[in-house]
Image 1: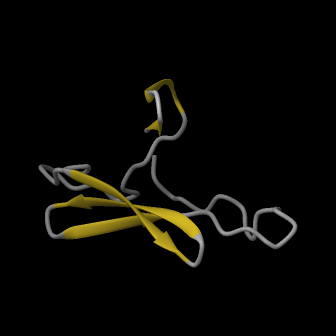
Image 2 (image 1 turned 90 degrees about the vertical axis):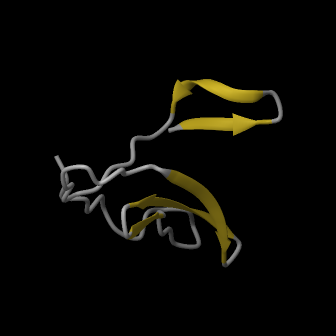
Amino acid sequence: MFSLGATGVGATQVATLNDAQPEDNQAFGRAVTVIPYRGKNVIAVSADNEIFVYFRATLEDGTDLYAETRQGK
């Protein structure tokens, strides 16, 4: 995933999103959107008959609520 700003798409990759349990011909990433939720943005990615939502929960002081938990390879 690349950043998007007023001047266009950034040249540096900022994140990689994936399905922890991918299936053949799933079409992961066929649509991507950003959705505001409680004052923060979350990313939704679609595949065939599935939607994946990505977010990071933080405490009020800015520290992560929990460590990385993805199980994908």
